[in-house]
Image 1 (cartoon, one colour):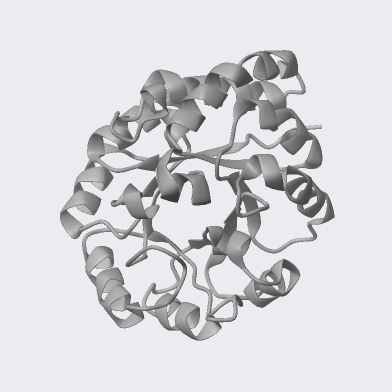
Image 2 (image 1 turned 60 degrees about the horizontal axis):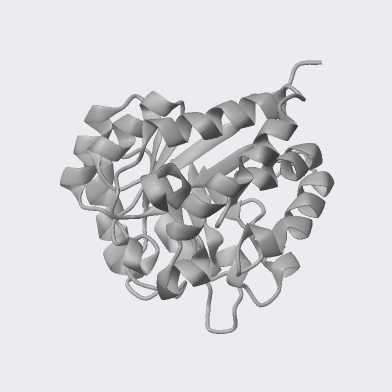
Length: 263
């Protein structure tokens, strides 16, 4: 039986990051700025530079500030139009209302500006008041093909049982992408449960520091581990590498925002 190659998405801040992720074997880029706020909308010049630097699909963040509220949706709509003109064809977004439910009014208003482009609902799900209700609210949204989630607000270590249960119960709908403090040691359980998309940020950088650029070698380590897990082999190697990756990822998720979001 053929096994789908797992998708590996890497957070990039610059064209240099995007090139290194591509060289390391990533399948997709999430492009952001402002990691002190866990990722904000980049400017059009950065989008154009990244698109020129890699042939990989690039998903561009639409987010104006810390947290998951929908303030500035009109401004983000203008940004979406500008970024589409700069060549952006895929996006990342997600909003919660004051009660912790998916803010469908804001989400729909923004997706109308995307022209049918594919998009990811990011980790707002992990901070929702009712996870089941939030997942139900996402069904059928136009263009939505991926949900980025750690399974819990604290990150994948806390949310691993939830991720595995949701993957095993998946019956269509958006693809579940595991991310948020993801470590190599998490891969065997996630792959066994059927998760086939993975998102890394600090783990793709030397020492796990956001001050360091993406390392092609670090991405290559993840690519190899994922491919081995997809083949049903190399599980021991992935586990053996967990300590090193844990250090890298942990170092990249220090500070208040990283502790909260663990990207």
